[in-house]
Image 1 (cartoon, rainbow, N blue to C red):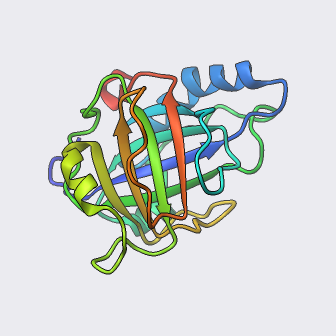
Image 2: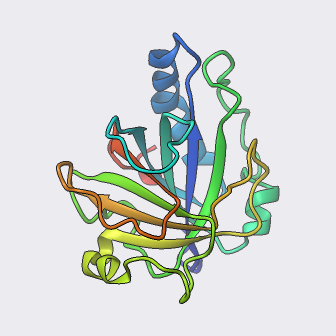
Amino acid sequence: MDLSVTMQHYFLAFTNPIAGREADFNEWYDSCHVGEVLRYGRGFVGCQRFKLSEEPLAGSQPPWQYLALYDIRYDDLTEFAERPWIEGAPRLTSFQGLLEDDHVGWVFTPQETPPAPGKRALQPFQLLLAWSTGRLGDNFIFDKASIARRGAAAHPCGLATPQRRAQQDSPWAGLVIYELAPQEANPPLAGFESAWRFVPISPYIPRSDV
């Protein structure tokens, strides 16, 4: 890892398997795709995979069943968007017939220094993604005290620019990533337009392990 790089980001990749191919989709993702992205993607330092919880939440639910949350360390997001792969990267293993065409990937930048990649606050834990169409500025109405109490287990973020080209641009400019114990109730969500809860389906994989 280049220790001179200072900017940290989250890359959220949302996907759906093709009907009837879910087991093959997960095998491809775990055995091929995560490792290839960490080896050959610019700035990718780790990844953990999640699946949408069956617990209903207020607001619109996502059209995607799966999330791969990648940690990124990279200063030049223009290069990251325009040249996503390192020089000499081979062709990635095909997902033809496994992955629906509605997959998207969005980059969000923490507003505060996040924990070191892979150092999640709670083990085990679930993710709650609380979304806002507006950025989380001083005038944004949400429970800052709740986030402050949670400390390293809540990460306010803003949509990064530029973004990689995606099937769908992010409709959200603000995001708080909460880490919750499995049986923990959701935090106050006033001020957010939507919230999605995901459960982990893989351990955290650092780039050094692939």
